[in-house]
Length: 91
Image 1: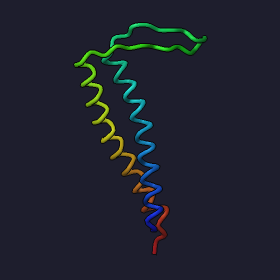
Image 2: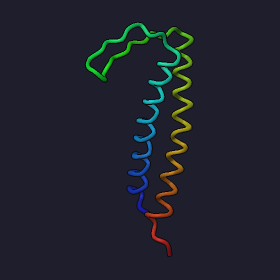
Image 3: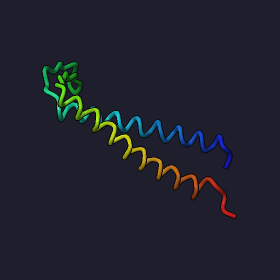
């Protein structure tokens, strides 16, 4: 396997992990923050605003870091399994 194939798969793994971590961070903000208002934009679309105190901000920060590491390990393992089993031709 060439170095550029490993680089592309690593960047794709990082991108997927970052997207999933962003969704996890939003969930942490909703769990630890205080909801201040909600604006209804349509029938199924609304915008929520949350306020975080210092303790909640630290929880969200460390929760995001921990979830990114866990998600990166899982997506990295899946990507490595895909690369070694399907991409690299068996001899």
